[in-house]
Image (cartoon, rainbow, N blue to C red):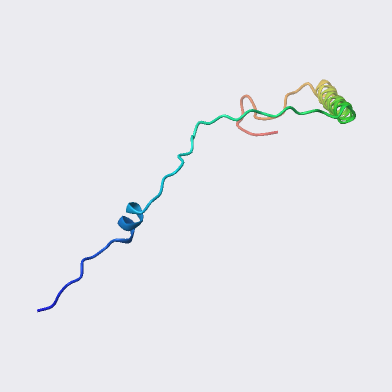
Length: 84
């Protein structure tokens, strides 16, 4: 006859020997620190936004002018199922 040693699962040993000293608060909110902005950077960013907005306005005006020259709408036909 032989003797069979008891089976010890590693996970159960780790669970028994665990140490829970601090449980993280999953919904903890931290305060935001005050941020001082560089006024030169803000001014440069504002000028860049104005340039981008001006470019967008020019593109819209060009598109309107192009549509005014060709009043027939392009795209899918009304009676024929074809693209122009």
